[in-house]
Amino acid sequence: MQTLRLALLAASLLVGAASCDSKSDDPQPEAPAVARHEMNRVFYYPSNATSAGISYAPADVKASGRLTADQLLLSFEPEAGQDAVSFTLPIARLTAGLTGTYALQSLPTPASAIAQVAYTFTANRSAAGSNGRLFLSNANYMDGQVVITAYDQQRRLLSGSYTLKMNDIIDPFSSAMSSPPALRCNLTLNGSFENLPLQ
Image 1 (cartoon, rainbow, N blue to C red):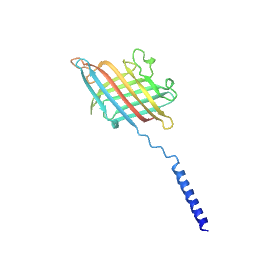
Image 2: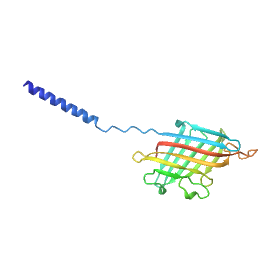
Image 3: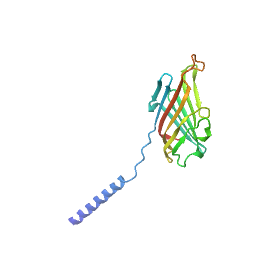
């Protein structure tokens, strides 16, 4: 009788252990994705070999993405910053999984590349308004690319980087009627985006 009781106790312990093991093997909820975005910009002035640059804190870079049946729109604008850039990519010219390297459009033949660009630099802000310069890829010579390294289709999260370069542009800090004539400079803007949610 004592032997039977011991056998039943051992069996119940084994069943309990197996139950605990099965629970530990259950799939755990996926951790929420953390979004992180970076942006850096440099103006270089060849005439005097000086530069003006900034690296925005990732927490300050506001980013948005929208994916429709026709296009992918990506926008990056640091909060209270001077720089803002957006890229528009036609879906028909992207890979099925969105990943890839996509050249920026530029003069003289914008349509030969994929990503349309709008870059804005705001020189001054005041209660009366703001002033700055807008550079569009169909009206300026640009170089660079948008690189999409990963797309989580289920969660609609996009990751990648971008680079924009323009040479011999009017100093964006200058006013339209500056005297003496404004300096010329070269722009390099680059950034990255990780787990950017797409609307």
